Image (cartoon, rainbow, N blue to C red; front, side):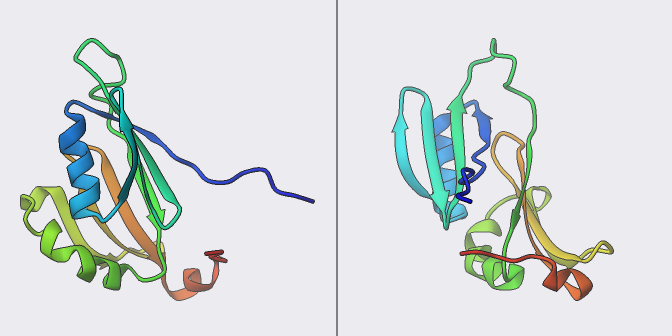
Length: 133
């Protein structure tokens, strides 16, 4: 049977599209593939994000989204991003930490308040994911 699903690419509202693009591109290493008309599509290793510039009158603005990105090695990824991430205020990121539910995670908050968590399974959870890269 052929599968039909490809990936999930959430929409994130942005007050300032250029600022949001810079955050995901320059701090988190996403590539910018499409930009125009108040819209941008960014992707890193098949993880896609869609940014939509919104003004104060649009209902989606101000709603915070939490995205969880499963990774193979949270510590290595954090080390790759740490120089850029650590330029943020301390309340906008967290360093890698083991969680009681069997994940090792770090997180960042984008300029619009959206929370992006990067995590890997540890202990019993280390084997639960069949990553198809």
